[in-house]
Length: 229
Image 1: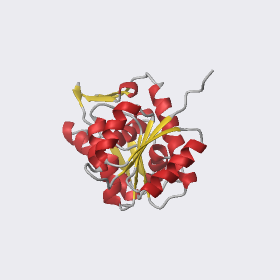
Image 2: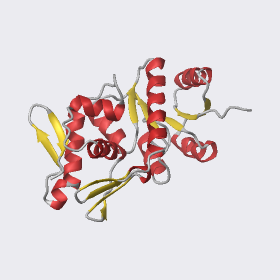
Image 3: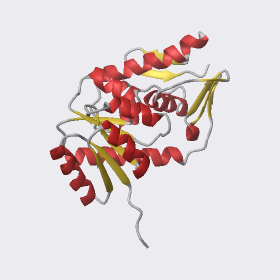
């Protein structure tokens, strides 16, 4: 029986980098497709139907962030941003636009492969989950990636969703910033801890501030937790 290979769309305008990644992924058993512009990326996304996308930010014709925004209108396919930009602002922009992970250039191929496998494992696990999480007036259906607060749908970015999911799965449990980084992006992943504070602020503005109740509590010197009452 022919094995179904996981398909990866590589979006990179530097031919040296795209060829290197392409060869390495084929060697690791992935089926690959390469696009060197934002416009071609959108075309190949429709034709190739990838299981994962490696997406550069700086692209001709259409930027990587705009490509990601358009893809997110119709699909939750895992996306790892691959870019030379590596400061907190750029990471937050990419993740907030719906990326699952973010790796700056230059990178070791072993690290890229590890992150790809982690994202694919996480996506498979999420897709197999059909439980409903509920804390007071906050309700989440993980399989549908839907969240409601007092019956009203919340518009969350993918990173906000995963962070909230971690809290709702473990109510009244304190998580440090490093705990949250590991839970959302994986062990050994470098994310500035200030990024966590940014996303906590986003969640509070959409949940706590909206209903004038405290859901996400700061535990001074330790981290954050979801309070049940």
